[in-house]
Length: 118
Length: 112
Image (cartoon, rainbow over all chains, first blue to last red; front, side, top):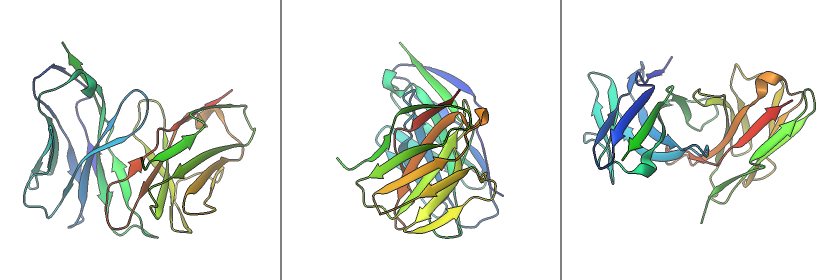
């Protein structure tokens, strides 16, 4: 069974600073994918970034980058130049291979609450 | 803009009174998902549709049912809500070609 671990229940960062949110995973699959989602207090889950297990380069999307270390089974999210609007819950998730009936099943971690301060 | 829409955003129902939550999408994605997210917890997949094919998670209670009358719409029916069913219910969509799922704003269900 797949498992996602996020060990930081809460993080604080000052505006304009960079912050790293930790994520480790466990799977026996050779092919898998890792995601980060942002959930503001309004509730909507916003897709940020995706990393495939066979991707040789770390994924980047604007101010977001994913520090993928396959041997250590970690997929940390780095947010550069933090903004007040980055304050939200952040979830790491893994895509499960071979889901019955098609589709992509996501297993989520417990999340990290990020607060950006002035 | 193409999007995933959930109605209503807030729903209050009485213990044991059936309730239906609605999800629609303009993305024309063939896969639709329903997640339950209880307070301070991670979202948990209840079931998903791949086109018209329904796929239930093994641990989803029988109290939860779903319908997908067409590509655009998907409904979550809770036949006899209990106090433990109070949660945020999130609808998401994806295609088979890409892995990311696109979520709606959620419906927050309160059971009194």
